[in-house]
Image 1 (spheres, rainbow, N blue to C red):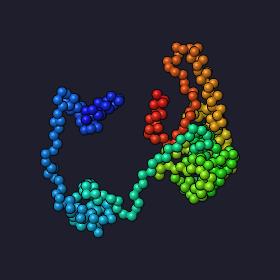
Image 2 (spheres, rainbow, N blue to C red):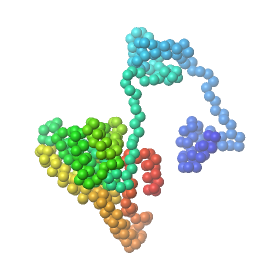
Image 3 (cartoon, helix red, strand yellow):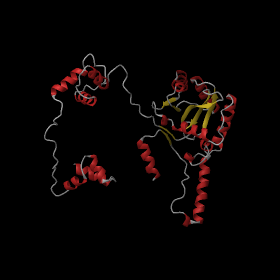
Image 4 (cartoon, rainbow, N blue to C red):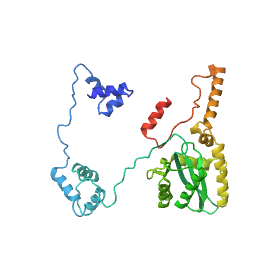
Length: 341
């Protein structure tokens, strides 16, 4: 069975040596097994280690760590305390190993156990389906004092659909900006997915209540995972590293708001985004990208027809990007690679 599994893995493109190592065998052993009369000649240990803990010692460990004095402490706390009392019953790793074998390795203390939070994958195949938003600091002349830029981005088109600068960071400002953005776009937000990180304004009751009232589906990043909100983070990097970003702090709130307004105009209507075939977010949001990319494909086809010897393969891909995934799963990434190949 092992040989058959290894051969199946090799047939699908795996290398033989890593496949053998995965099951704990050498390539020579597997080749010997593939002979006319395969025999498993492996020999396991014939005796227990001489320094193995006895059953009495294991019972002592279990009795000690479950005693009233130590039942709420981890082995890392128990071992030094025992040493202070002149006792040594085993190392921390030994205590963990014995507790695991006796099914006693449970969480100690009153703290809640860590929760496994799966990343939320969102898919958009058109505008106004998935939005992403975040807040970033903009410096002022006073050290340690900032103004706060709230930005809402359409994940599919990369268009900035809402932006406002405030002097404080609060959920009330975020909720007001979201409602204003929907009204300005004449959009019914029911069913819209709004993604953000786990910041205070994002999860505050004011913002959550507003989203529930409007029928919006909130989506949040995993705790302490900054790249779960990649579109907003990438936008902030573009904003703060573009040539027009001021080299000095913003004089006041009005100056920051004026500069942000100019940036939004440039980003939406002039900036050609690399992830959407180098069209502007506005062209993609309104559907004008189809004609633009079709024209580019014609230009490239004519150039290839004029000088075919200069083209070793297909021309550049100018087909529109139909689907955008927020935090794609591993299977989604593999499917994307296969389609690109």
